[in-house]
Amino acid sequence: MFLALVCASLCAQTMNLRATIPFAFRAGEKAMPAGEYTIRHSAGALILHNAVGPSVILLTNAASRPNAPRDARLSFNRYGEQYFPSSVWTSDSRDGREISKSRVEKEFARQTPGEPVGIALRRQ
Image (tube, rainbow, N blue to C red; front, side, top):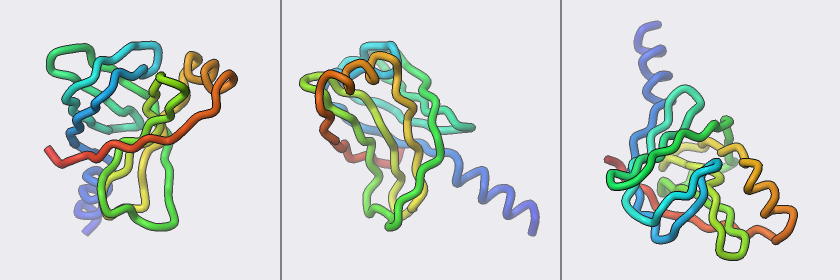
């Protein structure tokens, strides 16, 4: 029984999703192109991988919502025409991951009001 609980816990902490992101964005200090991305999470890090471009690893914190979203989503903060990933949520779970703001995003947030933007995710 203990092994089943450990396995369930490890499976819940790992995600393997895909997204089509229709705009360029900044992740950490890196500029990322629009395109098809694989999103993986493990051990507090979110990995965004673009098959034809760069990959990036972002630090995350555990997050929770009062209600479980129906669909998996990757959320961005938009400041003018600049986008920064902010959180990722799997379907049917109240638990998600919030992405730590980079130095560059904090600077944009001081200058421009942010607006949330969501991208649907699908299982790989």
